[in-house]
Length: 513
Image 1 (cartoon, helix red, strand yellow):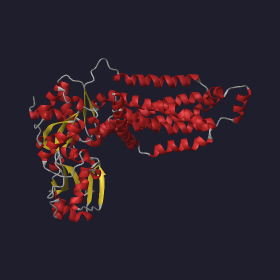
Image 2 (cartoon, rainbow, N blue to C red):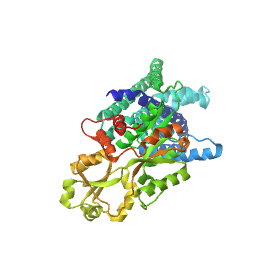
Image 3 (spheres, one colour):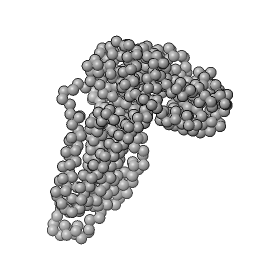
Image 4 (cartoon, rainbow, N blue to C red):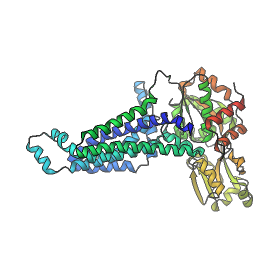
């Protein structure tokens, strides 16, 4: 709980900044459109239908779609003007959440403006008001209570959806939830949910005070609600005020325990060297590499098989050493990315079964598994079934599972233990394989590529001597046994370690300089 509270100021500050910015932009877009929609029936349906269509897109998908779009625009502007912009984190999150805030404000504002009594409009015309005067002095004040109802709805939606910005690199209260789900830290999950809900309730109540003031023509309530919002936002944003703090390094990580540990291992070494470090965690594989190549993050650990298939689009398997060697050459030439070397262990995809189930069925290899697959159920992590590796191994063995289900990695192991699935796409460096006495099936056709854990450095940090001095002692120093122990210390049911704590123990065991 102490760790959760220690992280709260930073997480809350970014969450408030993102939500407030999206809500203000959403209102700035929605209100002029609402005026146009209330005046012109031909515009009304397209505007409301378009806003409604955006709401049908899952918020996480909308957040993810903005990243490659903004990255392409950034590269284009950089090629033209010599200056790009950050496509990771705040900007894609802001744009997606702004679009989500439009519908409730647009719909209620349109309804409120159209609901103004025609007799009042006629009276305004009768006293000689211009259309602009009539809008600002009559229509908007009368419609304000209805408009505020839409703003309240948009605020609650936006604050809730902002928790989903974590996978595109934006710090928010969602960091508690994503990390907590992966490591089964239920205190983090509940803390993140409670903090987000509390923030939404506070914003809703203060906006509700403004709404009541508008309905009763009570200026004091409107001012009190508005002042409360401004003061609350100002206090929440205080941790973001920088007093000459250096920009420092950005360490990236994907969304599972091993990545959290390795990111903390790198970040901790940099911090002890006196550097300022920020973390971008819970990134998807494609997002992480693109962010590194674009200089959005400085360093992270990826896996040779992932880079080989997803980045280079290769389907052959020339062997571990050849894969790393060619990746080193090709990624440097194509993207300027430095493959510093392997940490010393491999975290390969591996099909695993409970020992009792495998022995009962007589399954020891993927060939055996393919023969029995029509009556078996496969569980995988969220990415695996859409990755080239799955297409390659499926083509090699001809699987036809009775059911295929995707899970967060933690729940994938739970599903195997409970018998909900018969086989999972496990990770070879996961300590739960030994702890749960799982059988890893052999791959006689070598359909799965090697997965050495390799350290990647962004093009802009390729000549950074300080960073290289911190990273180079890690190359070849981490054994698969040491990594399994560290992973299991975070993933086990009792006596869990934090990723930062596991990283400290791992570094101490490795006796690094």
